[in-house]
Length: 122
Image (tube, rainbow, N blue to C red; front, side, top):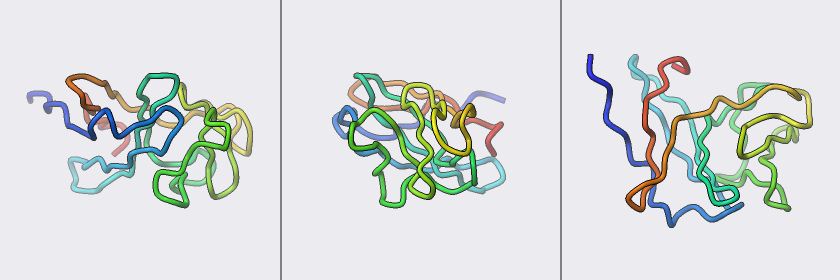
């Protein structure tokens, strides 16, 4: 079976450093969908499933509002768990020491791309 081609998530210009996330969905082989997001942090793009490690809820209570006021941590809107945007590692909260499920994303040709569909998350 051939690997699926990369999927365009958004234009690079849509992501500002420490700004709103760009939400999207991953379609699984069985037809189910998983919420996901990409953010820009310190000039680089990072992507994760939009699912808290503590309770499987989406991190953002308001679409794309994931960064704290400093722009240096992603915050779960449900209970305040704090994640590093560059690694997905939880530094504070009930899921401390766990990490968000990272996605294989890349920035090229003025776009942000999902390189591979993560079967292990479906």
